[in-house]
Length: 300
Image 1 (spheres, rainbow, N blue to C red):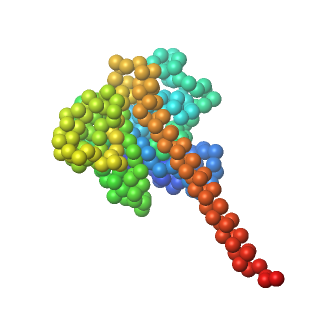
Image 2 (spheres, rainbow, N blue to C red):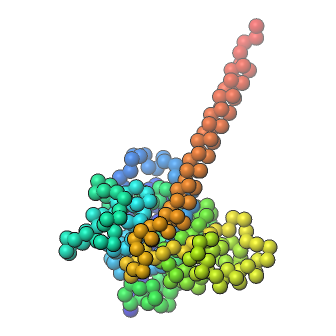
Image 3 (cartoon, helix red, strand yellow):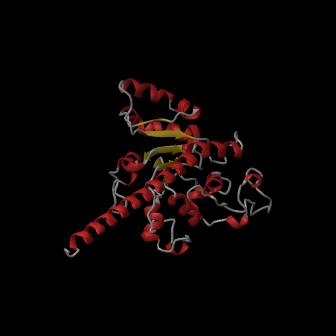
C-alpha cells in the first residue's frame, strides 16, 4: 500500500490573496471584489480538520471531494451557496440524502474553487489531522503508520505559511469533522496539547464524550484551570457518506450550531471593530488637521 499525503492547509492567504494553494487557479476565482490582494480578510477563527483525504478527494485534488460527502452541502447551506445539483451522474436521480433539504437553488451553485473561496473569506481554514499514512481504501479505521500535520505549530503561529507566521494564532476553535474516529486520532497525536492546558473540549455532549478521558487527565495536570485563551476542540458528526446513522438535517444542525454560527459571529464582531477603528482614525486625523490649520493660521 502506497503512502498518501494530505493537502496543504487552505486559508484566505493562499486561496484568495496569492492563489498559491494547489487546488486553486487564479483565473478560477470569481469574487465580487476584483482587487482581491487589497481586500482585508478576517483573522482565522475556526480550523476545520478532516482525518485524511479519501481516495476520491486525492484523485480530484479537492477537500471532501466525494459527491456524497456532506461537507460542502452543509457549508453551502450555512454560507449562502449550493455545492451542486445533488443529482447522480450515473443514474440521473437526485441524491435523496441531500436534495430536498438544501436551502439554495441551482442558481446558487458554485464551482469548487469558489466554494473554497467563500469558506476562507469568512475566516474558516481547512486541513487534516493526518499528514501522511498508509491506508487501503478510504476509511479512517484503515489508517496505518500515520504522521500528523503540525497543527499545533499552525495554531501557535510558528508554522511558516508562504513567508507569513502568526496567521493561526487567532484560531478560537478547532472543529474535528469526522466524528468520534477523527476525535480519537486528534487525541492520539495532540494529547500533550491538552495536558499543557492550551486546548480543551467544547461544551457540547459529543465533544465532552469523545474527549472525556484526556480532559480528566488534563484537569489534574492543570489544577488552576486552563489558559484563558485556550482553543476549544469540537467534535461534530462525521460528514463522510459512510457515517449514515444521522440524517443530513441532524448533521447540518450540529455543524451550524458549533461551527458556522460562532464563526460567522466572530466575523461580524471583527467587521464592527474594523468600522470603529476606521471611525476613530478618521476622527484623529481630522482633529490633527484642524490643529494644524489653527497652528498655521496668521495672527491678527
